[in-house]
Length: 99
Image (cartoon, rainbow, N blue to C red):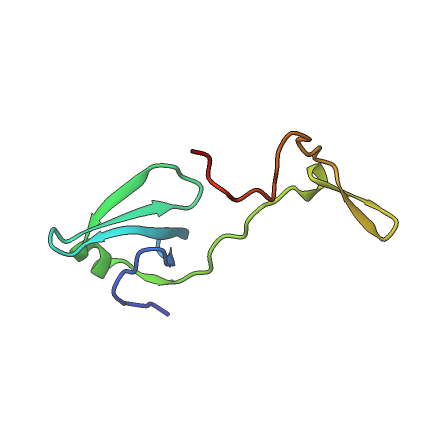
């Protein structure tokens, strides 16, 4: 099933022909250029609105975030203990600005 819609920055799509997911980073309606970032790539790619219209795409879910909680927390019985040592000199509750 193909899908055709206005590209929306921040939304994820799947190119079913290339079998790759991507996110729309930016859309310049004046220039007719859409900037996308493909899954697993750091570089962005600029495509035209005509290219977009010719693509076979469908909505896709955002990639799952991969958090490594084992490095941050340890379970001792039923209690979760934060292993990151706090800075004893830091005043976490002082919200006043220094002048």
